[in-house]
Length: 367
Image (tube, rainbow, N blue to C red):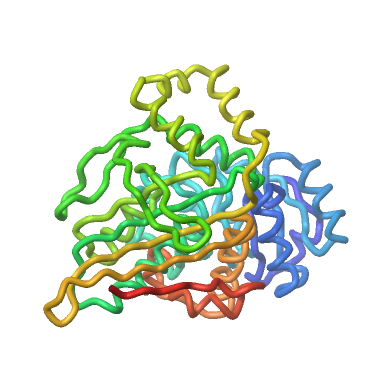
């Protein structure tokens, strides 16, 4: 591990490490937190030069740290670290376990459902250590989870939740986010149906979703965002699905057709996968926007009722970073219940609004 010498001179447990802190979202999280907690934030990753360059760009407000979490990280290295924010994907929970042993709180912005399940199994470990892990932090998962929580308040009994995310092709996403999206296009994953998880295929199950004025009705397809598995368990909803569409109707349709023809299986070939990643990064047109629609159905006073929640905004990565920073400020400033939780188990959207640069405007309709 490589860091500036002052890292070793501090004895208080007050540092914040942002793993992947020099990436697109990580940089924004670091900058937000450095304003709130000057001198406490470290941008960590495997590439020292990138971390050091970013530190210089912030005028030293964010400190550089070289750290490879794919290798064992002794809990002693975390003795001065109060909070870790994870912005990169992991394949096992060794680093989370090190955080637990060190009594370090942990926030994760990733969207891998299988990894989150692994972390959930560490609940008793983190509870015993007095540390807290909060998962599903960002837009989807994250804001989507909070919208579902807000919607069910209006119902006596919940039957189904449909979550739909629209991403703008003009929005420039980080390479890791694009790679994750491409890798999910040909997968099979589980969704909750009548209280049991059943397998479905990514980009199947097309459904028209009404995004309201301006955006209108869009065909969206099932996609393995982890929010659908999380809220099914945490909010006890018997039927939950998350769908994806792009702001380009024809490209959304093309992806679905490619799935039905079996062409997306070719993404398992390295060159074709890389070509697809490059195409999504550099494709012309589209808007730097996103939209989220949550439709929750159930019963209120004996009547079948639907609650619709809708938000539209610009730059999904910015919202992800702001939500992550807002959660981090809450966790850093106020001790949370120890253990492993998803964001909707600890916070409401209202709890986070004051920490956001721009409030998320939610349009609610009850039918």
